[in-house]
Image (cartoon, rainbow, N blue to C red; front, side, top):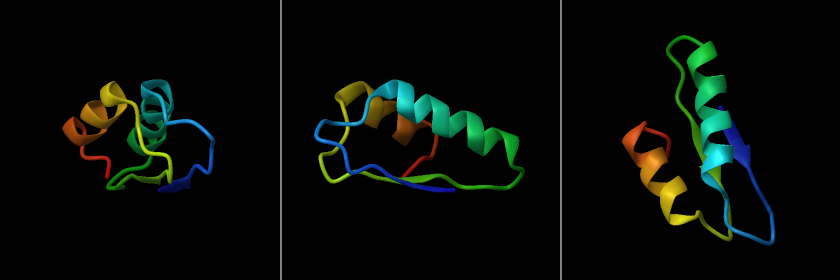
Length: 53
């Protein structure tokens, strides 16, 4: 699952949680989110902990 976010702000933890939920619904899947502005601190830590790159 790939998601690209071209927003004017950093990606929030809530958006990473939503991606994690989608990944859990698809067996043997991996999540990658691309965001030019980066991620909020909590979002980045959460993503790393759950294997979302």
